[in-house]
Length: 157
Image 1 (cartoon, helix red, strand yellow):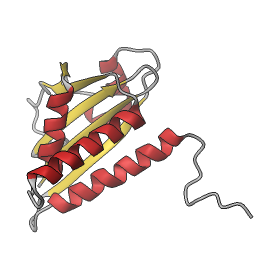
Image 2 (image 1 turned 90 degrees about the vertical axis):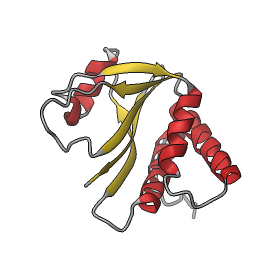
Image 3 (image 1 turned 90 degrees about the horizontal axis):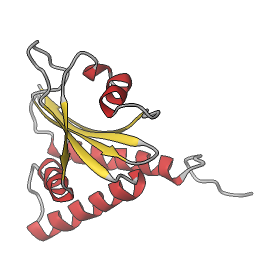
Image 4 (image 1 turned 135 degrees about the vertical axis):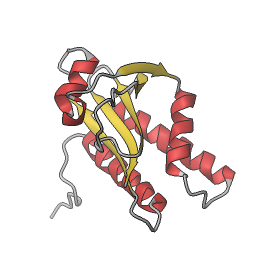
């Protein structure tokens, strides 16, 4: 009898995304205070299909359909800093450990998504009051040749 593991996936990348979701959800749970705030961190595949990135985002996520927004190219260091701030909102470990864990998660995200460029989703048009994005949030688009992913961090009340 051959052991096939708990997950039946044909592509390593598919398992990697599930693993990343677990890591992000764990950090969200660690940061959630004993209050009505709820933290949500996730990574989701965007159906690119050779179209404009803004259109692809709107086609993949209902929350963006009626929103105007801008994609701003950011550096790897900017993204790493955002990861550090969201993952370690509650500073429960040393600065050395925070840097090592942030670098590890960044490298894992890069390996699994194969992103070549990172965009921050900015200038959301929030003229109509909405809780869809939460009280605080950051959305990033990880763009590669084949697939793109949105990784987001938010908290809501």
